[in-house]
Length: 216
Image 1 (cartoon, rainbow, N blue to C red):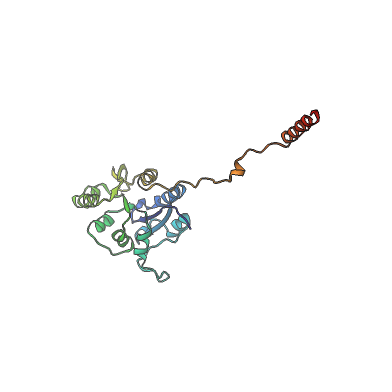
Image 2: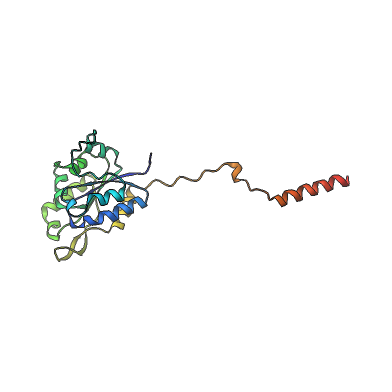
């Protein structure tokens, strides 16, 4: 049974969703386990099988799973050490800020007691809209952390704020907020730690001892 910190990665319907694969790989390299939750719109940008292969875990896309006897959203929320939403659209930010839960990811966010980190990605005018900014401020007051967005080249053609934070920056913040478990030290026996005398040294010692006895 793994003791690695459990991260739940929520992927929403932004063009930046394709970067989720790099993020999953980087998090696993740092010693985290990653469970991916995708909204239906996210599957338009990256296939669930891609994230399933990289995380080596089933990717969930629906609130109801007939093959799983658990109440899915509460079971996932309960085991998470950190919930990441990358990329986060204005839609998921608005749902969370206003207590709406109509799909798996939004239900997990409301059921979670874990830390939550959101990395927005959207058009500059959407990000700067007063309603979006109000929702972000509300979530920050509740203890939710945000990383980005950054200034960069957007799909709409603008060079402006709205670009997803770099995966390496997201991983750095994850490590600061929820450090990975340190590697277990190699335990060896006391006997194994003692230096062994060479056969030549042992023979020399016995020979010297024999000569001393002969002189007596």
